[in-house]
Image 1 (cartoon, chains in turn green, orange):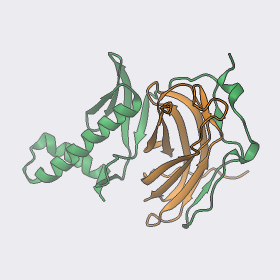
Image 2 (cartoon, each protein chain N blue to C red):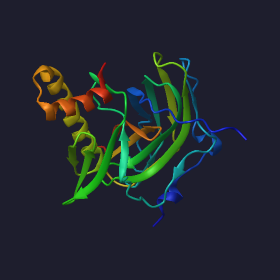
Image 3 (cartoon, rainbow over the protein chains, first blue to last red):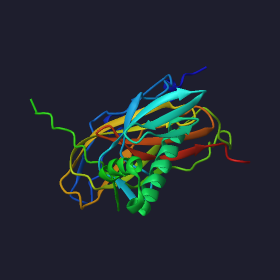
Amino acid sequence: MPTLAGRIQFSGPSTVEEEESLHPGTVEVPAIPVVLRESLPRLIPAQLLLGSLRDPRLRIVDALQVVISQEDGQIVAEAVELNEFGWGANLGEALADLQRTVAELYLQLAADQKRLGPGLQAVWDTLSAKIRPR
Amino acid sequence: MAEEQPASRIPPFLLGALVCDVAATDPSTGNGKFPAVRPMSLYLRLTDAEGHYPVRVDFVHAEKDALIARVEGAMDAPDRTVSIDAHFEFPPLPIPEAGRYGFRIYASDMNLGGVAVVARLRAR
């Protein structure tokens, strides 16, 4: 049986190209930056930085630290500074669940911030330092 | 030797991500099959970025969290108020089986989101 690697056709250094930006930013891509793998290793990092909530109303201004673990066959993503969790069958689902949870928490606390007790006020202080409305 | 620039910690905002590929049917069989390979390219538009960012895009089998391919580069953004367009053209990427795949996008090791790709056989 042919391996996956045997099916890959490389076209040399031009396999990845950077298009000139229409805007002042620049993106540089090295000549041969693509690493194609014959085996498919699982890619579940122990931790990552979350820079997006996938919510057009909100943006993260200081990345959330997320610890990834596995429990009962599920992936668990924990925003350690907020003690909030996301669950899923894979990393993408767990992160999406966490993003939804954090966005809902932010919007709820933002609406109630005049009536927060000390515990929720501390959560709001952390949230409002890391997340801003767009 | 060029001095390594510090990575910016300002999370860019991913305005949009699109996967472009070529829709085609295997002429030898008239139908698709797995494993397959597909050329794909990824278009990104970012804003709220400022400074130097190492950029990484992982193409993964989402259901298995399996890394299939990775592209790494760098981005320099002078001003947070502008948007930046980037286009990554991948070589033919292996699709071992039907299922959900995706591109996961990182800047300065910050996960900015991604875009999903569903691979399935076309109904005859």
